Image 1: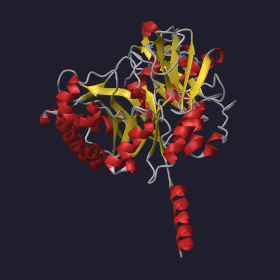
Image 2: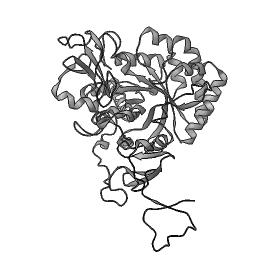
Image 3: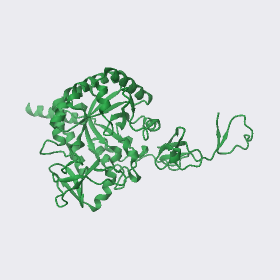
Image 4: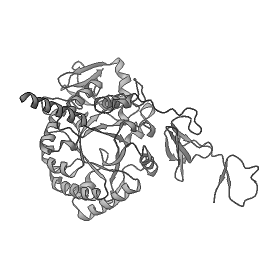
Length: 466
């Protein structure tokens, strides 16, 4: 009898495992358009076939004028053109969400909105209008709160859930995974998990490149309860809703300046953030695509107890994720029963997306192989070589009208037009003010009824205007 029960339990567990359908949220940081050279991230470099959801991060903020409505956080780089490009991307592959908040947003106006019912009403109306206009699947709320904001934040989430669910839209809430007293008091875990469709745990907040000690970015295990395993266990136990939890996996690296280059170990003294990379241009930060090629001449180490990778050269010390540390986290995730909802790739633009050190999107491929459909890794992309107007994937400007451009992706062409006063910059793959873009507009304007041309001698560069 006991043997039979054991067999049935084992079969049930295996079936449960087989049914685990992990979601893969690919966060795309709007800041990536400011990076240069090999670190500049273009729309077509987002491997949407690997993602179940895409989050356009750092895109929305609260109107600083105090209306409570949403606005674009950086209108220089994020505008109707880029939002539209994002909304049209992989329509049938991934659900697309937009993020409100991030490290660049001033949270003062957001907190003010939380505590004002009329501002909240205007926020809900404007957010719904934005999501509807661009046919997005939902919103991510990415704002850290304090203990004083706890009650107002919960009221906000409860109302927002009702508003979004009425339109069948998703609510994703991002929270810090740190288990310090500050966060334990600020976040009501059971209620947040009840109101949100998904809760994304930010695991890369364990370290601060501007702090006084060398710290791992996201260690799986840590002696001071600041590891991924401890945080995840706490949220699972407190929320009672593991099926809503999303584990954040940072693909970027944090860099430090060591106070003593002879002591390159975690916990040693730091003089602050490492020197910024010439392409990403942000102190204490590097994308993996920048770091991986540098590691060939660095000392690389792996902490087996923490399951964390680090490297150093001179007085520069870096904590980062590699294939081994990611596999350890994914194995831990798969051991959780009931299963978690999935992972958040933080962020897709921080990977080696152009394959400078191997196959493109090497870290993302490791994650897919660990919890996703490994067949995606071997399925060849459709070739577009020599196919009519789309010789290969990428962005192309019109040969004689610099406002017009198109995207080729998997042999499909989509046409776009820059706003008046803007031209399409081919290298940066975005619309910029006309004085920022080299362009020779070489076309002939012609209005119906004008003399000078007949159907027999129309020039190729004729532009018909009304």
